Length: 501
Ligand SMILES: *[C@@H]1O[C@H](CO)[C@@H](O)[C@H](O)[C@H]1NC(C)=O
Ligand SMILES: *[C@@H]1O[C@H](CO)[C@@H](O)[C@H](O)[C@H]1NC(C)=O
Ligand SMILES: *[C@@H]1O[C@H](CO)[C@@H](O)[C@H](O)[C@H]1NC(C)=O
Ligand SMILES: *[C@@H]1O[C@H](CO)[C@@H](O)[C@H](O)[C@H]1NC(C)=O
Image (cartoon, rainbow, N blue to C red; front, side, top):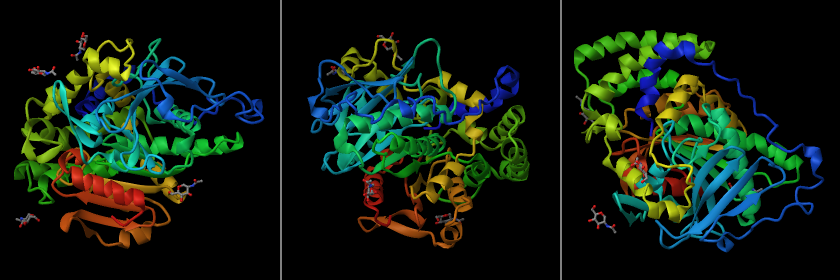
């Protein structure tokens, strides 16, 4: 879910930019690792893995740690909720003063063999419980206090994580006012978390690992996967098993604003998957502004990055190309087929967001999952985190460069898009994948956009070459597994199996 403020605050940046510190240039610090020379072998009597998740207590947290990550530990407990058939594991990864909450569900298929998927929702600031309890988790929230079984859950044939990240989101928290405001920073904690998990639950070691995310996840996930990939070099040096990063999956992602901004015009003014939703006079005006927006973005955000100028360029593009359809059209910008259900700012057109918030904030659920009392009130979205990321201009980071780097290293990339979404729409994602500068570029751009089917019925169109696949899902908006659960699961199944979509 790309939250409203991610775009709204582009404009507020115009007024607050001077008070904002410039984007910190993040380098993947090795400081989070113990010095490689410190340990002859990581497990030289210092470390014994938990190995079996079943042995964890349902009553209290078990704490896990690892000598390679002296600043990190993991608290985890077992519980039975949501799925009913398989156990759920919830807990925190503690990184000194930072604490990330996660849910983990074993596969309903063969947990001993199935792949592992990491999921993050977007925002920035959206809790991954939105993905869990609305889209691809084992159950769906149907009222303030009830869930139903989801037969199309992604844990049908995979072991799946949902992580509230970065700190400050959902049940995740930090002490001493610590916060994270870039995808690169967030990725360091995620990479450490992933390494610790595989070290402890050794039956998953070497298992193909897929990192998936939605919406702002199009920015997060390429950076997170890059952190996991680069970390493997260190893990190998330390004699540890590298994480078998197999693919990334971006669902209705916003990855590259250079290609997405012009697509906002096309999505509202052309007859592409949805008829034009904006009047002719406005469309003609917008068409003239598109080149100005593109030029300004290129000069201020991409050719060179100037924090204030880039903020101004984003604000100009957003006010003209996005705001009208998003706020004043009365349409649901996450699904242009429908009017917005309720007030946009209250629940982003989906009553279920608030229901999930209420459901998870009950004492009963908090106890079941072991929510820390430091989080007094569960909020499904953190506007603070959203504002902090907007202020750092994280969205202007060209995350597509991570995608090409991953492709060059054999990590597969799936870009799938519900085709009636406006916010991170298929037109922009199509352009983004076509303009990726990688060795497979010519073959990919030459590949046809072909139909793909589920149960003999057209499910969308797809283009593939080598490790890269772009696919649309028909009759789906921003949240594909919510709108088209069966197509979404089948797409995931084929992708994990390495079959053609
Ligand atoms: C759930 O909420 C409804 C409506 O507020 C209420 O009638 C019902 O008793 C609640 N059920 C449970 C199990 O708490
Ligand atoms: C990693 O996963 C792939 C499947 O994606 C598998 O073929 C390969 O053997 C795995 N590698 C390791 C080292 O386990
Ligand atoms: C708009 O697109 C739809 C679906 O492709 C098509 O059926 C319809 O004829 C198009 N309308 C116009 C005016 O081209
Ligand atoms: C969550 O529950 C706490 C404690 O009952 C309450 O103070 C808080 O307002 C609730 N939060 C929301 C968003 O309803």
